[in-house]
Image 1 (cartoon, rainbow, N blue to C red):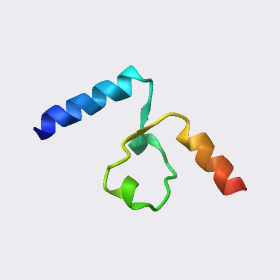
Image 2: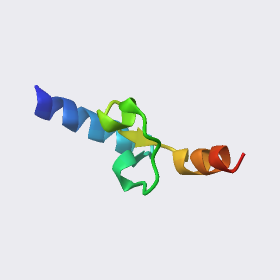
Image 3: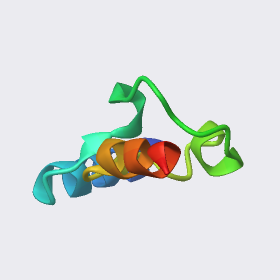
Image 4: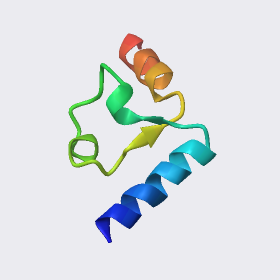
Length: 54
């Protein structure tokens, strides 16, 4: 079951042109990132940089 879920998640990442969160160097200290609930993104790095900048 877990392997199938991982494969399905990978297909979604590829299909929607997202990137894996693990590719980011700077991620918030938030439980959803730590537990892998959020596993991909599109431009989160730009959003987070702007958020930190103010």
